[in-house]
Amino acid sequence: MRTGQTHLFIPGPTNVPEAVRRAMNVPQQDMRAADFGALTLPLFAGLKRVLRTESGTVFLFPGSGTGAWEAAITNTLSPGDRVLMSRFGQFSHLWAEMAERLGLEVDLIDVDWGEGVPVETYAERLAADTGHTIKGVFVTHNETATGVTSDVAAVRAALDAAGHPALLFVDGVSSIASIDFRMDEWGVDLAVTGSQKGLMLPAGLGVLGVSAKALAASETATMRRAYFIFADMVAMNAGGYFPYTPPTPLFHGLAAALARIEAEGLDAVIARHHRLAEGVRRAVAAWGLDLVAARPALYSDTVSAIRVPDGVDAREVIRIAYERYNASLGSGLAQLAGRVFRIGHLGDLNEGMCLAALGIAELALNEAGARVEFGAGVAAAQAYYAETRDGAGAVAAAAE
Ligand SMILES: *Cc1c(COP(=O)(O)O)cnc(C)c1O
Image 1: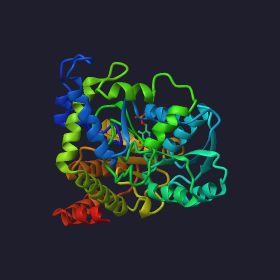
Image 2: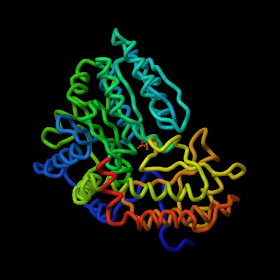
Image 3: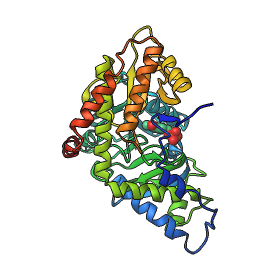
Image 4: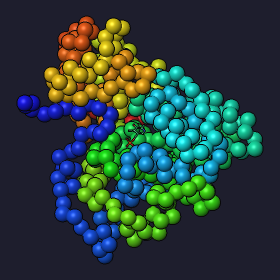
């Protein structure tokens, strides 16, 4: 029998705020009722603010982030289209695999896990592609497997410098609503996320931001599509309706989650993620352990992937945290299995939750055979949180 809270320190699904959970506890309702749009239309407007887009269109597909990946591709590209992708973690790997399954010709650049999108190589490939055979350029903004955030603005700059018209696809599943993301400013054509990460909801919604250019492309693209169809959504969403039964309780939760983000302020949400993440990073440094992310410019503010010392099995760390301390830590994925554990620090989170994660990680690390000093990581995070409590760190981060 387990007492107390079960802690969720994974990078998704994230903790659902109590107010959001209660907001979802509603009777089922008529999805064709005259007033249904009063619930749904503000969600599109709120998500546009979160994506920082005015000219884009937001779609809410029943599904998860992976479904939104698929919708983005099948609606805007044609079989055999050439796309530029890079792989540096499990999520960028899976998106590339999907593109191949869907019959795209993928120019896949393999990069060391711990690095981010290879902007220089992208720039070279785009400049060399004077015939504009590349139809899509893909960026995994925040690689959740390695805790690496890539520079989307730099990829946009590379496209512009080459005068290249390819669509810019961005996986923002673990960045949107947590890390700075600017759909319009960065010229993102397809912005993908899911409900269960920064948006603090259960899984169930694939969220897609679509630029006017991508919407126009969907009218001529010929890839087969059946369930995820932009045109059907556009027609029905105008009145706040959907082409098939939507998950209305999630919509109520989304309304509550968006209200929380607006009450805190998106800039403050982003600054909070930075500050909480930095405390975790101070702890990792105090333990004498390394992050997978190769250098500070790549550090993710939503997830830290932490290498365990040689001879220690990260799976043991995770097992001990779960079985003895009621705490879920993220696992090392694919080639990082056994070598890495992850702390997810995104969504509805505060200092106390991060300190609990660090304290439990110290216990589990030691019990799995790693010699880290009890309290060292916790103390380093505490010192940083105390130092930045007045918002000084947060303000500085927001101004960067
Ligand atoms: C979680 C995640 C996904 C997959 O999303 P699902 O909602 O699980 O389908 C894709 N990309 C990134 C970066 C993620 O973190």
